[in-house]
Image (cartoon, rainbow, N blue to C red; front, side, top):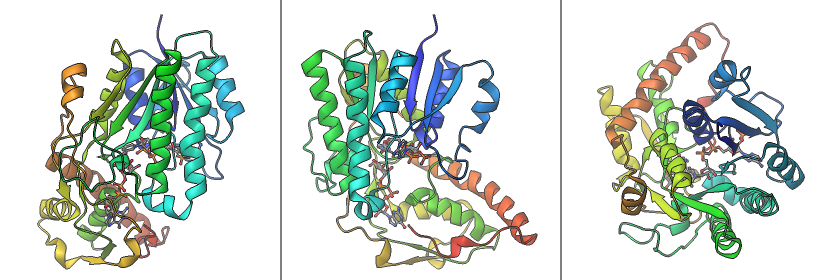
Length: 345
Ligand code: NAP
Ligand code: GDD
């Protein structure tokens, strides 16, 4: 019989890549979406049109704050695997909305863990942990034993959920795993994260419809990989014999400046002519440097990243040039307002 998976946060970047992967493997995938006044399923619209009729891809309204809806879903779907990807995932926003970020980051995972605990079925659980939990002060490759030093409400909430996931694993012999993922990006990355903010602006700069882009700390360094590679690692964690915690990373770190250099060079442009910086995009407590050691995932899961840093940057730059062409047509026809002149994050 085909396996069934429940994914929270299916409308997000990772949710869309993971759904695609699991459907391809023959899973029946159920995803949670939260109601919003505008439709926010653009990342999964293709999957909806292809698979909804067959029942292989089903969406359900739910919110992390509504534990009754989460419990009902777990009870009725009785999934084999649950991937808890939903979160308020923007670090800067977490300083402005600390309570909401903490509530969603902690209560959602706890509600899922409690629902699984009382279900008369062995369910495998994946928690989306984050390299932000390490805090960015140690300038060395970080592994599963490196100390946590959270620097934002977002990171602190992820530490709580991480510890709870471990606690349920140890206390109730539940199959609970934490994937400690370093930054992973793609053409479907949210547009307020720095990589996508850059490539989205770059496409418009190439076409002459945007002049400048304002960013924050260009010296921050991240271990950036491709989201498509990372969801494969999530799945592999739940196929392992025993539950555990694993890091997924590339083992390389690059500054925001290096990202800019490769992206702008790709179109023969000098980034320094287009980039401004402003304190307004600096964080109250910056995570300066992240570099991951994924050797445990390589050994246990036979997982390795497949996409290099420069391939990732160019993939995003090319995809966003195509989107910018659409922007230009709409702009020329006066069907679009250039809101990008005043980015928020
Ligand atoms: P994302 O694109 O921001 O997606 C987050 C998802 O969570 C969206 O589907 C969002 O729904 C949903 N969500 C937010 N608040 C919710 C709530 N209160 N109730 C229900 N759903 C809610 O994030 P991502 O990049 O795919 O990351 C997936 C997970 O991995 C997140 O937990 C993130 O913190 C974690 N993580 C990400 C990275 C990374 O580099 N991408 C690294 C480490 C860990 P809407 O579409 O309606 O907003
Ligand atoms: N967003 C943003 N906007 N970041 C900027 C900007 C800007 O204009 N300018 C510089 N940066 C710097 C930030 O200060 C940070 O050091 C770095 O770029 C990366 O920022 P983001 O792309 O917003 O990602 P993040 O590293 O804070 O968080 C992402 O990765 C985490 C894993 O380490 C998110 O996906 C988190 O959800 C995830 O857990």
